[in-house]
Structures are given as C-alpha cells and as structure tokens.
Image 1: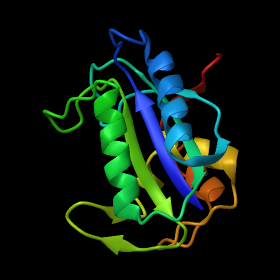
Image 2: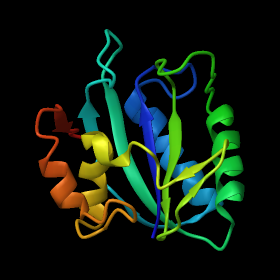
Image 3: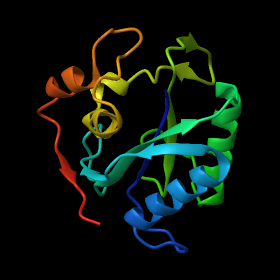
Image 4: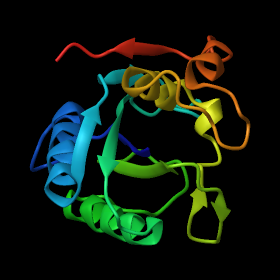
Length: 162
C-alpha cells in the first residue's frame, strides 16, 4: 500500500480555497499515478499549534512501480506547480504532499524517511488512513491505524462537508 497525505491551509490565486487546492491536488496526483482510493476530507488544527488557519487534509492510495524517490520527486514538482513555496519549517501552505508509506518499506535518508516519521502522532493523517484501511499496520510500531488513532483523541479533527 502506497499512501500520500495532502493538505492545505492557504488560499491560492488560481484555485481559491484550501478545499479547492486539495481537490486540484487530488486531480494532479490522479494524472501522475494510478489512484485506487481517496479518503474523506478533514478540517484540522495546525500541528504544532499556532495561529495559522486550520487545514484541509486527506490521504490517497496509489498504485505505481516507481521507486519511492521518484514518487517524492513527482510530488515536489506537483506542489510547486500548485504554487507551494518552501521558506520556513511548519509554515502555512497552499498545498503539501507527503509520501507516508510504501508497502512495508522502512528507510531513512536525508531526503526521505519511510514510513513518515510522524505518521503515528497525527490524527489528520491517521483518520484518513482509517477511511482507506483501518487495518493498515505501521511497519515499525506494529500497530494498526485505528489503534494509533484512538491514542490521539486530544487532537481536533472534523469531517469537512464538501
């Protein structure tokens, strides 16, 4: 299972709202990969907590034979095409794509860590993963997504009505 998280909390000149940015992000991922599932969309508070606008977040499952580094390269190109600028860590953004996992692959390089190092600490990632497959198991922690999500009940996450 290959999972990609997406999120937005800034308006863009081209697509408008964070919701529209995410919808365009899903469309572009679909043009570049075979998308098998898309989660529901959620409105979530920024983590770490800040005065930034809340995010729209979700997850897509893709099928591809591309190497994880090639997926990452494509995702960075797609972010840039949607107007993403990277200036500061944890800054507000028009769009963000994160490669969360690539089957059960465990790897750590300066460019990419799989599974994503904070996947188990973020309800805005785990809740959409549960939409796709609540039985997904973290390859290092060896716990299911639904079990990990229950441990994060203090994080605010709301289903986005679209």
